[in-house]
Image 1 (cartoon, rainbow, N blue to C red):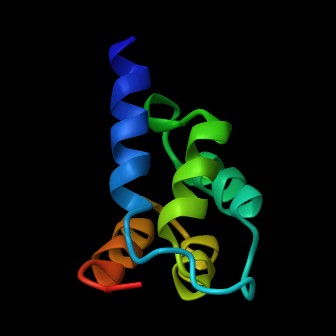
Image 2: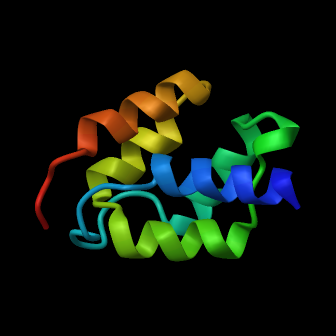
Length: 87
């Protein structure tokens, strides 16, 4: 249970940003799949929850950055870059 909470908390933190701005860029399904591909096993999240957070909070640029991330450090850099945006 603790692992599930931690993975959801990290996914929510990484997927924060402005409200989804337009339909350009990768889909939230692709973002969720990529997040789970690069996350360590202890941080892999529930795909449905990640997709929901993505749809609520990520712009097309945020999704492009997330899918281009090579590792969790890159993914966190995307989140840091998007913080403070207003949608």
